[in-house]
Image (cartoon, rainbow, N blue to C red; front, side, top):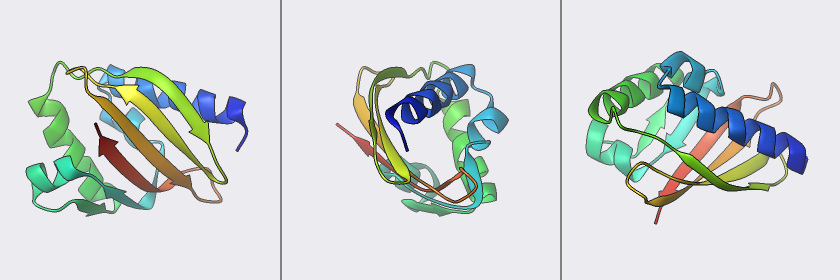
Length: 115
């Protein structure tokens, strides 16, 4: 993944979240996505969310609970078939999301970490 590709993905990912359009957010993810997050543990009782239907259910709850949700892009790090998006959320908290991509360009694994 080039730096330009990583920046373009990150910009669209941030814009999707800021639009609160769940279908737009989920369009970045593969059907067999595995997502790890400490907030998932709090909201759905499991920090590992597997599959697009489960991720939809989790994020639908999260968006409903946070109508003020807004992300601000800080920076992006490109890797081999992956990237890390560094951002600030609506509470001013720094966060990082690392995404691994499958052959079709969709995210197959994602890890959310918070400062």
